[in-house]
Length: 264
Image (cartoon, rainbow, N blue to C red; front, side, top):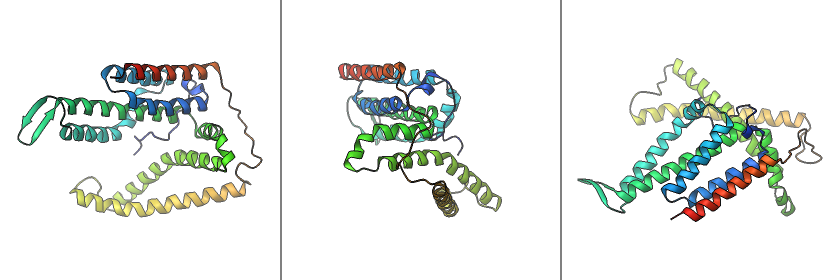
């Protein structure tokens, strides 16, 4: 459970940590879109280099990121196998009974797996180097023009921040409940798949009860402190757009142009 790093924040003073959250949000959002322009080895190599450069500049331990990617690797492997088995394009490479592997299916499986991996690393890097408060402020400012059409921008940004903040808390709560039930004789690791699913069902009830209890306590605490939404709200820390933020956007736009030009 503790290997899941989505929603966690690692304090630091790296170049990525010091960037304006608005620049990081825009860069990650644009990167997730333009990664679908990549369709050959050169474009995917550029996307991977861009992602690895961000990991290097963030100074977040690679071992920490790798440990957090372990649960995701299973999904990536499953996606890879599906594409290999069900994509019938290109030259036939392997044929054994009903089992056929085509060159196009193998290449597509590799590309989709790399696409998923870089998207997950990029989005995870955003939460690792940006505190939930900064993410909330950045989202609220970026979505500010939508207030003119009466959209609850502040509430949306607040919900996103609370959701990210409570992911590690819920994982910790799940770990405690699992240990408590294991001490009472529950077994989550052995037996058939059906028996494992049956063992997990009793875990959901105390988990949901605890989540609703935490939500109620948070709502009461916010009301006790006079929370009234964005009415008359001020910020202790003002966001300042610097030259490094402009450079990040220029690099992202350059990557967009390179992927568009080099795609097959």
